[in-house]
Length: 100
Image (cartoon, rainbow, N blue to C red; front, side):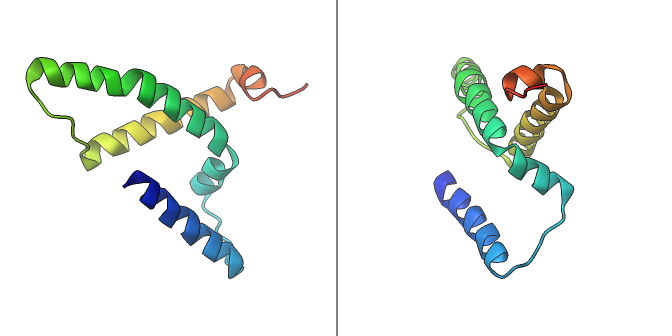
């Protein structure tokens, strides 16, 4: 399901690029530039932290694991916010291996 959505989004942007349609949306451009950092942080946050905690809370409360739109948006904005913070902090020189 998620891989299909990713394929559709990537295909749409590649189609726009092929048709020479330039998009100037700052958030989308920023996400494109730092997509590898966002992907890595997503894997760390979701796979190692959020999913196990959600499963534990779900098993204790009897709630099944679900993904409502609100939960997804909150998770996406938390991930982007942490990536933006890392990028703006001096820590980004170490994480992104920038040379001064």
